[in-house]
Image 1 (cartoon, rainbow, N blue to C red):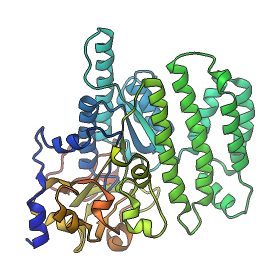
Image 2 (cartoon, rainbow, N blue to C red):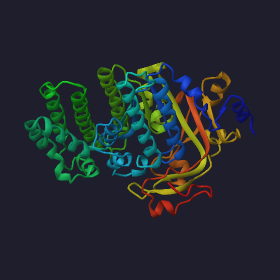
Image 3 (cartoon, rainbow, N blue to C red):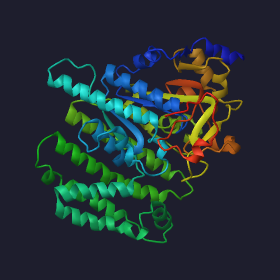
Length: 451
């Protein structure tokens, strides 16, 4: 064991799978308004399961009110209605049906299914206690999406809302959104043609639609009550998403950082608007955020920031300061659910061992399989970790053959995250739809045989 790994071994807290594993994290979360829980890939079982376990404790013990995730708003809203008992879905698996686009496995997986079921049961128990006048520990919690890929679904959601609440406005706004019809619902085609100037864009139309919706707010909300306010907020957020998604797709083919920054700026805006709405309607709002490390770790402490990119993690740190806690997740080896190409099938792939000179390799060399590391608990450890190293990021696409170029960036960990949860060997998250490509993928002999 090298000297750096020996120093780390003396301060890390091993995770044994016991009920006290996350006590240190829960303690660090006291007084925080926002807790960011990352992931080093979009397809690792442990990352989903552990984030769910931590979030349950934050809801039960610390009164957190919402989970905001790297998912599309309308798809997550369907889950939100289910867990709050206001939707039409009767089972958790039905509530996940909105996730139809690539990559489905990111939210249509067994770990999310379990968590959504737990959240519904928790909210029902809170409501039951309140009805009986019994004391309640914790608070009811919702499930929300932060991302902006759902342009078409959001258009449908806005028009559905207006058809029910303001039919005349629905006709006018439908005409404005009709600007996208010439692209056949293909947002990438819209981005390519509009962004290159080969066709007109829909910028003026989506802005005008949002302005009109805002202008109709007092008329539509003649009905009183939190339910009417929640429904308008949902429509308003979809209209904002349409405006931001139009700009995102129009800039995504440029050879600069515009589209990345627009996306994370949208996530931050959504987080702040959600917090404002929950505070106004439900007195307070403490939010847990689930997203990839590359979004939740402070970009200013990485090579991303050096090339002009920022992310929601950096924006949260700037806005909330000490009222925010950012926790990253890492792994050294195992399997992962990912694709080889965009829109490709889900595959179960082998994750290569962390490269020499990476944080993953350093953590592996401690010899502790799973652990919690507070990046600021010891000045000597903070100084050690602040030395720039490589860090791995696996998204929905994983290409092991070009791993160094495709999946590693440089970072200064204590400036990127407040703490790290490391799971040395991890396994692929299990999609609800286990395709032939996934079943035939690489797997450990100990891999579970069933769902």
